[in-house]
Image (cartoon, rainbow, N blue to C red; front, side, top):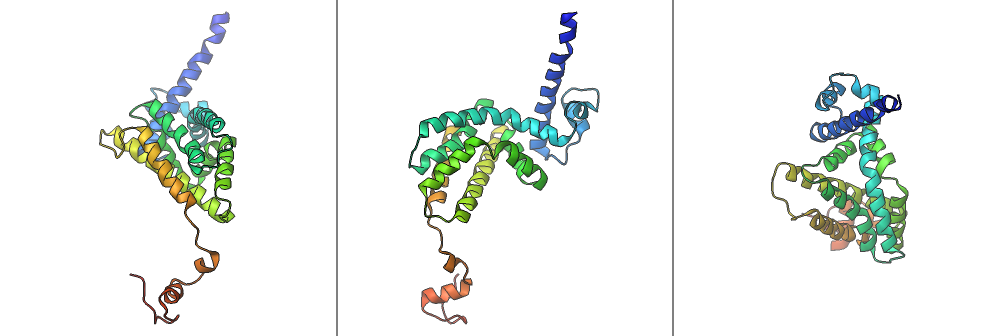
Length: 243
């Protein structure tokens, strides 16, 4: 009786995992909105077309399940790197904490994988982007990384810190998705492995983060007036125009 009582639970767990795997692949390849629960059930080998609803309730909860499968190992890896970074004053160390846990996880997945493309799909949909932010982009470890980065560039205004943080996130997500897409179809990539991709991302984001910010008074001026000031002209077009 004990064995019979425990039987359904492992089977249900296996079914959930197959649904998560199928959903991740289909969402990555076609987009979340374009994929139906029936297609996911069929891809997961489920004869019952209501399997997704039965195990997850909604497509949004299925998206959360996919994110959680990957977010946990990435969070553990980032925690380890934070321990190594300590109180570093080098922006590269903190940016490495952003990048390497993601690329190392993608390397462990092998090829083909779908997680990077899945993330890129979520970021293009306002509602799904909110889920990704809540599940994967606002973890305690990421907060510590951003605090460390902010200490490396204390003179940057708060709005610039926020803006560059968003830029860095987009660069990581879409660069990884592009590499994953190329690997899936057997095409060549700019870097030979995921570690090389991480190095390139760290270099680029370090330059982005530490770049000087245009002073607010100049940023708010009309481009023509600023160009005229730089070239000794006046505001009415007397100076040299850009381009």
